[in-house]
Length: 380
Length: 257
Image (cartoon, rainbow over all chains, first blue to last red; front, side, top):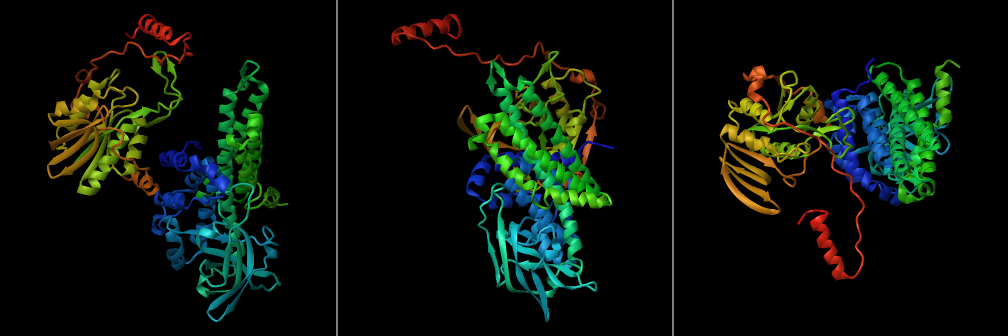
């Protein structure tokens, strides 16, 4: 056992924290207000190699590990939940599936520019009637000669409005038991018939770009199918497992920001002749927040470590995502409570954390779905 | 160009400093590369990228400084040298550090040596100039611009807000002032590559130095935090009386005139 970060991990943490404090945090309130996706920040993150952390150098990445990536997500999320979400989605959902399942040509063509931070990618799984219930997928792809013809709708797709391509899941046939075969297909966003609308008015993570996709007779070459055409379902389950580690890390970052603000405010705010941090009622809140954040972070690191070691991590990723998002929500809620009336005002910047955090309990599988995943892993 | 950067690991003065038993408590302190040395590192990288050559970043300290050296390597320096004096030197001052660095540098044929203008902890600004004196080379402090052409450097230096332009020949030592450049972040590939770059560790023995050769020339009598800012005083009455009272107070209370 060793709970210390390596020198590289520590250096990455320091660098990303400094970058996020300088380039992201000062604008977070504005981006939230205006629902602005900071393209220029993603360009800078790309130049620093942040978009390629967990990918090897041969694919344009930085050759870091999942722990380093989780650290980066936490630090960016600490500055801005929305930017953190788009960052996590770009790496975990946009790029990872191609790294894990793509052919060599697909990696060269699509992954390398993403890892270098030159392009962004998105992952189109959720539909109006199908999210975690993938069996409900209605988007269809039919082979016509050398091309797939895709028809369907996707919703709440992060980064699609700035993506070069979206990996779209679609039904491509039925297996011998009559069940739908789902394939993942790489669809360039400039393909004719592909409409992307990004006008959701979200409660939180507003700096993140979220879109609705409509595919009407979109034709892509059949070599755009991601890896094995019959394994789409397994591919996205694995992708989501990895994505959950990053959502958990993001929840830790947002909670950490809320906690730091609450602690500072509690020390400065004087009532009844002393700072409110001297009152047990406030102390107990702060103690619980600090404890739960640290526990969540440890679970994130453990899940990331398991993934880096090539060991099963499905259950641990769900543990991390479920606990970090729920504990994080409690922490953000208490941070507002500690601020009292001031916390309810946008000016103090704590209410944003709660709005951002709510998504952590919903995205990449709701808390309820996490409990299902865990129960299934327990053999129920 | 054979370039050397003198770097100091220092505590982050933006964090809360705690003094315990007459010393800064290092337990909770955050450590960073001295910000002025970051300008020196950045400038070295820019000079090397333009004119070619190699950058060696040097520090005197203990093994904890490896992290800051690795950060300098991640930013783009080529080699790092840690002169570890933890076991050999009990009390050190600017003379100690300068003597050790000068001894290390004396046979290295440096073309350009860059250091920070001051360290944000001690703030003496002594080490750079002392090293140059010991090596017998020219030095220019608090520089805000550096252009090198052949064996000649054209330098702008900050003199209390004014600018002085100096032409000087190499070899040369300069100390970096704020405004010289905007230090880069170490990139991710840089951080990963830093792992494989050479980091040599030396001790006094390796430099043929004895403890008494580098013994501190100064003695620290006391370390204390600046006094807390006290509430101001608002003078009353008509202006002429207020001015009189202010002058009296400046004489008797503040004792500044």
